[in-house]
Structures are given as structure tokens and as C-alpha cells.
Image (cartoon, rainbow, N blue to C red; front, side):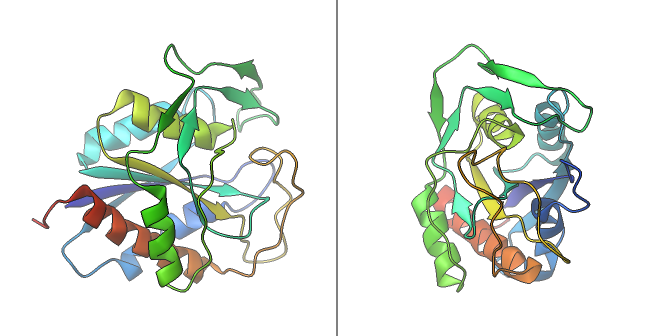
Length: 213
């Protein structure tokens, strides 16, 4: 079974994005049950993020998608329950583009994750890492990518927010996902995030009900 795991490049003046760093690490912690992990790092731009996800799906032909992004106002790993049909750039993207609040596409107001977020949170907690289900993926590009995965593909798809861990210092972002929260310092490390994603990937394999090739 092949699972595509995506993260994002740095944005908002940061030099790291915890999702991108962690997504590049799970190959070291990949499940030993025959699950193959393909990875992609997506651009933080309104015109580029969704199409980059779809290109990665076309290239890798995965059986499921786990998209990952960072949320600066959170201290735990948070699988998302819903993607909202709303895009809003409270801060510029990496091309300097801004976006007023507007629907992402014609369609329902929200779409539900095709992979049970409670099962993902449970798997991450079983790996010894704090996790809880989130009902709000924000309106920035994390949410847009989640919406794209659910609206433009038929694949089992999930989105997981991870804390904005940094190798040095603290992240200066947070409001793009959680506008009522200031940036939060998490006790988690990049290794913790990679272990969390490996646990989530294993849970996705079980949830999808497929056997390893």
C-alpha cells in the first residue's frame, strides 16, 4: 500500500516549517508492515498549493493521502475533522499574494475527512505523543489543500496539523490557522512529530482496509 504524505515549505518569514521537516523524516520511522510512503513538499501559495498536491497524486498514484501542515497556536498533534469551503489569507503567501475571504470552489460549505480523525489521534497518543481532534482547519492554505484532496480526488484523505516546532527558538506564526491564539511553544521535537506521522500512517493503512502489496 502506498500513502502520500505532504508537508509545506516555510512561510511567513520563517526559515523552517515543522510539517515539511517532519514529512521528510518518516522514512526513518516507516511502519514495517509493507506500507510505502511517498512524500511531497507543497508551496505556500494560493495558485500553487492545490495543483502541487494533485501533481503529486498523479505522480505517485497513492492509495491514500495524509496532508500535514503546521499550526503555530497548537501544542498537540491535531487531525482535522473538516475541510471548509473557505480561503482567507490573513497574511501574504510566499508570492506576496493576499486573499479576501471567499469560497474555494462551488460546492458544500465543508467536507468531512475520509479517514477517521479520532482513529488518527488515538494512534498518535498510543505512540506517546499528545493528540486531539480539531474541528477547525482554519482558512489558510492548509485548509485549502485539505479541501482539494477531498474535492478533487476520491482517495481516502486526511489532514493533520502539527505544532510549529523549530530547531532553534520559537515560531513567530500562529494567527493564520488559529486567529485567537498567539504562537505557542510546544514541548514536542521533530523526532516526536515524525513518530506521530508514522503512527498516523499505520492507522491510515488500517483504516483504509488495504493489504500491503
